[in-house]
Amino acid sequence: MPSVASRRRHLFRSRLVTTGLFLALGTLFCFALSLGDLRLTWAQTLQSLVGHGDSSTTFVVQSLRLPRTLCAVLVGAALGISGSIFQSVTRNVLATPDIIGVNSGASSAVAVAILTFGVTGPAIAVIAVVGALGAGALMYGLAWRDGVSGYRLVLIGIGVAAFATSITSYVLTTKPALEAQRALFWLTGSLNQSRWEDVRIGLVAVLLVLVSAPLLRRWMRALELGDETGTTLGLAVERARVMALILAVVLAGLSVAIAGPVAFVALVAGPLAYRLTGRPGYLHWPAAALGALIVLAADVTGAHLLGSLQVPVGVLTAAVGAPYLLWTLARSRSTGRRG
Image 1 (spheres, one colour):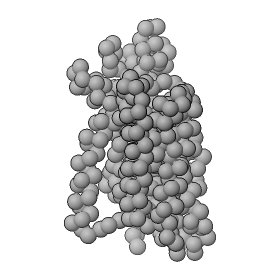
Image 2: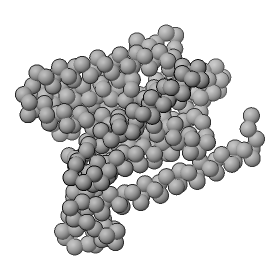
Image 3: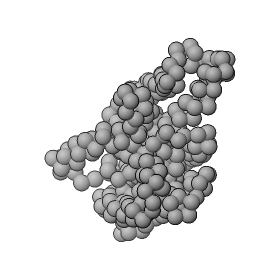
Image 4: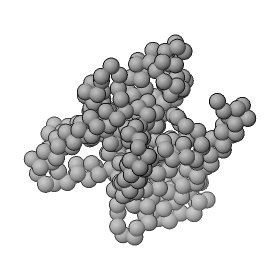
């Protein structure tokens, strides 16, 4: 077992890294607000942010740029925490909501609701969460064999994702081109239509995390010690596992409701948080900060740093995340680990 001094060093490193990540996020946040057709200095941006700028810059910052930037942060944080929970509970780095069908289930439900029933507004968030929970329940039920193996969960989740994607594809091909185009743009993962209503959806995710944080921390610490040890400590292991996964699924569903299925953020944030902090297991705030940084950086790059080309955030995260996934698979194979 690590010594007290070693644990203190790891704790200090974790706190230092987490603080640095949030400082970097704050810097990127202000940078994102200053970019656009109307370029602003940082002083103008901060003045407008607190309502002390002139009317035009205040409108641009508070009404146009701030909702989108907040949505990027909230989506990334939700995905980072969701992926970290999945990876820790299943002990498999590939068991994240974008790979095992949770995001696909939410996207499929929303696509059907929009294109078939014309649903709009706040109901989209409810439908996305219901779709994510449906996909998660189907996956968990099929993977259950006196417990859930992370390896089996990933394989079944890939099948669930393929099934949900086929439903989405069918709906897209049976609708008029204009309607399908609008839905298809959303399905790539985009923050272009972000509004204050979407920010409120993201705040629901924040509230869920804050309310559940004490219980979640206790559950995850016990689950990481193994089922037998967790039971010895008085934890209802299977109930704790299911509740933690439900929270992760809801967070993923809410992120899909805001921005569509933003790929690979949940896969990358947790492992990167571990490498930076040097602490194994479930990492709450570092994974949230990294997820937010990844999504916000992708949105800033796609919207402002590629000239006249506008690239949805989901396209950029997929372009970066896909090589990471291939590297993870190759590394797992070379070391003989199946998860």
